[in-house]
Image (cartoon, rainbow, N blue to C red; front, side, top):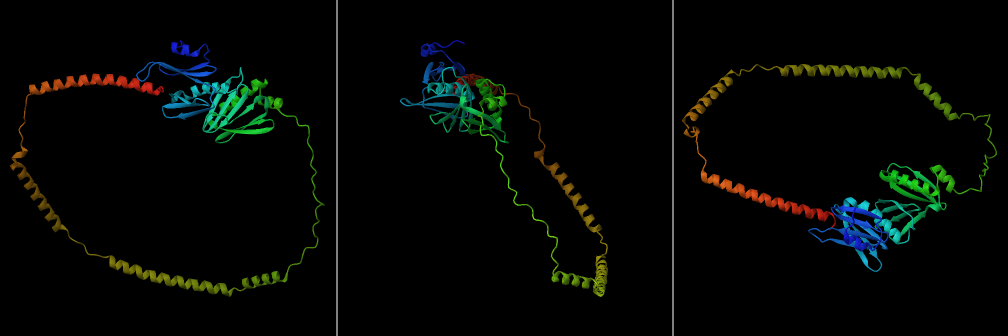
Length: 374
């Protein structure tokens, strides 16, 4: 792809390391020392090329529904910002952040940035020689941590229902990093691949064997004290108390009296017969009250029939005598003057439609330029 002339003059002989399309003819160029944002000629702005050095002290993002604003903070120049479409945020962040790491001397010459991950306020950057971690509102600033692959002594992963923990042991100290399961697999594979290539191994087991620390202390057996032994069982069990004997005698005495149970059964039978007698009297009384005499409704039916016929005759008479309900059909011919007016209105509507179409094209172009971050 060709490079615009204004960008070529801004490069000053530097090579382009990466380029990202921002929509339309707008484009972003990355060099080892700068980020160049190119804007083509449009309704809102003229052709331009702005450069942003990579020696920034802080990089922050402000993401919206349609636009993302990059803010680079410098020690002397203060803040400088540029805006891009939200759809290309990740594509732009990766090379820009790689340039900032290189511009601040964090990555060395020949070191490549493999992948950049953002999990809320956690930013992880995998390079070919280290893992960089930053926590905070900014994507990157001076408050960061880095773990060189040369200092790694073990790598492990702990799977969870929501997040996966990456346990990276550096100089004998485990560093735990949580990543959501949606991107944990990609992060796991890229980190393993970077470590495998750095240490020239082919598996996780081989990596841990290669970088693991030797344990010279050896295993020691711990002495277990089981005490002086087990006490023997007592051959002479204690005799039962007198209270237990008296309680058993009282229970036997109660079960031996048959007269008490027979008296209680007789009382229950008498109460049952009395309730049946009372219920029978109530049933007979309810049957006597339920008998009623038949009722003749013939007079009311006849009266209803006569009234219905009267209203029907009255309705027919009113309909025949009402002259307003009989309308003659009306036939009219089209008015020539009205036809002329309609034709004039149609012509005016067509002209308005043409104007609206032109305005719509202009609005679409404006929207496209606004989405490109102008």
